[in-house]
Amino acid sequence: MVIVVDCGLLISPVDNRDKITIVNMTIFPSGTMNQPTSLHFLGAGVAAHVYALVARDVLGPHSLHITMLDRTHDVPDRTLCVWGSSSSSISAAAVAQWKYVRLGYGDQSIALDLGSMVYSQYTAASIRALADERLVVSREIGNATGPSPEASVSLDSCDRGVDLFPATISLLQHFRGWRIRTSRAIFDMEVATMMDFRVDQSHGVCFVYVLPYANNEALVECTVFSTSIWDAEQYEARLKDYIANIIGTSGYEIIATEVGVIPMTDRVPERLHGPSWIGIGTAGGLTKPTTGYTVARCVRDAERMMEAYQRTGEFAVPAPPPGRFRWYDKLLLRIIRDEPQEVPSILWTLFSRNPIEKILRFLDEETSITDEVQIFWSLPWRPFLRAIIRG
Ligand SMILES: Cc1cc2nc3c(=O)[nH]c(=O)nc-3n(C[C@H](O)[C@H](O)[C@H](O)COP(=O)(O)OP(=O)(O)OC[C@H]3O[C@@H](n4cnc5c(N)ncnc54)[C@H](O)[C@@H]3O)c2cc1C
Image (cartoon, rainbow, N blue to C red; front, side, top):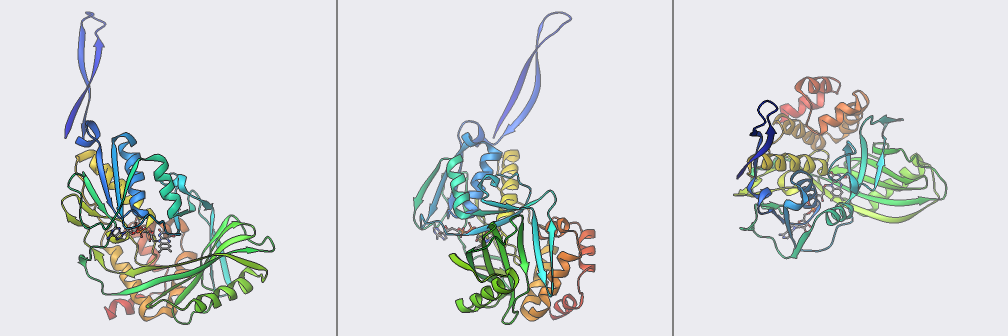
């Protein structure tokens, strides 16, 4: 650690003698002064690039030395969406943005104004490209087995299989989507469909997600919460049905396909693997069990970690959100597992009976207990009571 005393020279107007006055005193982590802070990433996926970009903004680009070790150079073709303000360390990597989000259930659909927020889409490649533009990253290929002794901190996106709390429920969020181009202009470019439950609900909780890129082009994705993944035909039957009956067209071509699986579990992995060896990303438990959203949580976690380092000169695991949020997730996971037929109406009620901004803060685990009482009051309570009793 280096203590810097910032001195100002004052000329006294009374006796004209020079006086040295201490204006400011700042404590710098050792890395930010003489030698750079070195961040070593085990795994160079989405989280690694997010933490590197946040470190640049908080600590400054010239004080960083960044190394990344991954078993592959390939970047997955992955669509990543995030709600929130349009100014964060990764905002410049956004490839599309929407002002409204739509939900559908039964014979209704609503478009909700996000107000000061936006729903932004990134890709794994756009986040990596931004990091390469703003930072010098030294990349290596290989199996990442342990921390680098030379680094100030080793940030690990590889699952080390060590749990703080083992899983009591393990489900999957799995999806298959088509990027389609329609013969007519039918999409509203300002509205992203977040969850439309107006599809067959047999074999798992199922909703369709629509991200329009042009008035005749969109990603239409069939997303399922269940215990096992489906055959391609099961997703495709629902996609065809949705495009024909809800979007309302038969004239389209499929220009790309996206598939994916995200774990939905109450498992909490251990994040501190050793001194200055910290788990990040999905392996660090930053995937929200009930939604799969990870990227915004990585941005916030990285901000807390880098700001604390700037203050203290030490890298540490940021404090987790209050434990009650894990309990809420566990209850919803139990309902998804035991009473999937209840889930569409619960989620529809959640969004349609509460201000959208409050629900998004709730999903970001940033609401107060008073907010949460109001939110739970608005929901059908019987499935939650049964989930509590079942344990
Ligand atoms: C298809 C899909 C869509 C998603 N959509 C969203 C979304 O819209 N919004 C959102 O917030 N989240 C989303 N997620 C969840 C999450 O944001 C992503 O999974 C994200 O990629 C997680 O980042 P990560 O760095 O933890 O993992 P990854 O990006 O998977 O990176 C892990 C890296 O570690 C490397 N690695 C692993 N083990 C080793 C080893 N032993 N040695 C060397 N390298 C190793 C891998 O090769 C990989 O490059 C999505 C996930 C998927 C699968």
